[in-house]
Length: 228
Image (tube, rainbow, N blue to C red):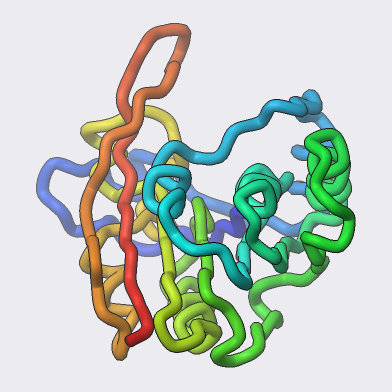
């Protein structure tokens, strides 16, 4: 799920375009995301993000929470790795596709709990999850801070939080992704929203993509943290 808020001032960073040059965002509601997911061709082999797979593959499975689960590629992959997953998104159409993906891949129907909810309102249970994943949830700072705080509070002792999203430097140095500075990540901004967690990794990472018919590179923020 990506919920984009009204553009504010320029990012204030040398070498990056201003918000006016990039464009101005409108608030995106679940109906628009329902329409988007309805127009996406079903792919039964839909893979997880390479960063998600690499960072989480070695973890011992337990209870996982996938916030902004979209059409389920990460929730289904986690279930295939043995996790008991709660997957949350505000797009009912997206989660319907996620259920279809889960069934096509042979995941047990009881292994993923699909929750239709807006993260503006959703409050996960405290200390209930061994893993919380927030992948490509591009929102304004206020909602992002609220969701990160809830994600951190949802971690059980020893639990892992993984946050991956489009980085601010992608505007000038990378390809694709949102064009609105206010919804983009930096490692510093994400880690600042996770007081009380131990930061294991906070990096900018590069991802090969196809952009306008040619091979290109996108830049993401990746933050991995733990509840000690």
